[in-house]
Amino acid sequence: MSLPVHKRLLALLLPMLLPVLGLVLAAVWLGYSVAAQIVRSPEQSPDLAEIGLAVLPALLMLLLLGVMAHMAARKALMPWVLLAQTVQARSPKDLRPIPIAPHTPADVQVMAEALNRLFARANEESDAQQRFIADAAHQLRTPLAALQSQVEAWALMAQSAPDKSIHLPMTQVERLRQASRRTTQLANQLLALSRVESSLGQAAGTQRVDIKNLCETVLESFLDDALAKQLDLGLEAEAAHVTGHEWLLRELIANVLDNAVKYTSQGGRVTLRCGRRLSPQRQIRVYVEVEDDGPGVPVGEYARLTHRFYRGPGTTVEGTGLGLAIAQEIAQGHGAHLLFAPGALGRGMRVTLMFGE
Image (cartoon, rainbow, N blue to C red):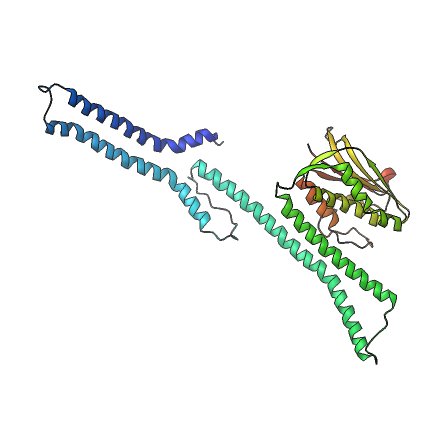
């Protein structure tokens, strides 16, 4: 069990303070001795040799105490110096744990363990970033390869045509359009995810956000999509406020609502709600909720919905698998949680964003 901070500091400084205290006491004693010699009466005053013999031991004691203080300070600080040299000698990419010797002082051990925990988290982030880059490259490669092969096929057809031109069937144009849209959407969401990760680590930009107004704004941006599918897109909003990044929360709500609008069948229903309600922990919390009566997702798949590039089994709707992953990143950065449940009467799906305090 580690000592309290003030006791650990005292244990570190005590070897240095004792010699210094000895120096002060010796200086006081020396001054007192000399003063006493001066104020003596002439008949009692010793000669200079006697004064020198009296002062010499004190001077030697001062010198000895100074050496002891220097040695004690070096001994106390040496583990810290070695730790600093170990960290400084590393390259920025070297995130291996710092070895801790058995007899390392407690304070230095606490610092080394804290650094090792930091290195472990940095390693996890680096591994996650590498996986993300690999997944992103794989996801982009597929639509880009389709675009390239289609364009090259058309180029060959045009070269063999007498007028160097071709007439494309609408089905091929539509296929090209879908591939282009998917590539653009994926690139935009990758950029959005990058912006989310960089912005969440910054306190600047946070403000008091009107959740009701934000939901109204987001809902308006989906009216055309809902109208095209003849969806009943509704809003049930009550006043609520949180502190956070407004543009990130807008992105979060838009991603969840976009999923619902995309996956709900023609003529279905999508409802966006917000306000304050009792949380699963029996506390009043701000929430945002999107519910639809679409095909839903098997309960066993809920845990994977926020994984990057995850696509549900049998999914035929165009998408990237990043929308809920981005929403999860933003939610965690705001101390909130995404909760998944079946919709009303067991149909569709309900996604709830529950904020903390």
